[in-house]
Length: 32
Image (cartoon, rainbow, N blue to C red; front, side, top):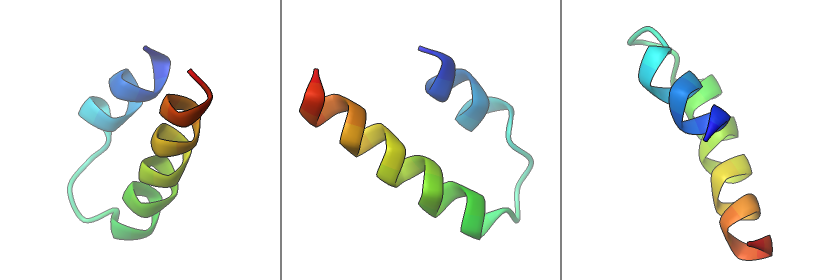
């Protein structure tokens, strides 16, 4: 939930941060 919020609120142009969040999201979804 919190990660989806941060992704939605993240400003455009943060490619590196988006990649990190994508990895975190996939990691959490796998553990879910």
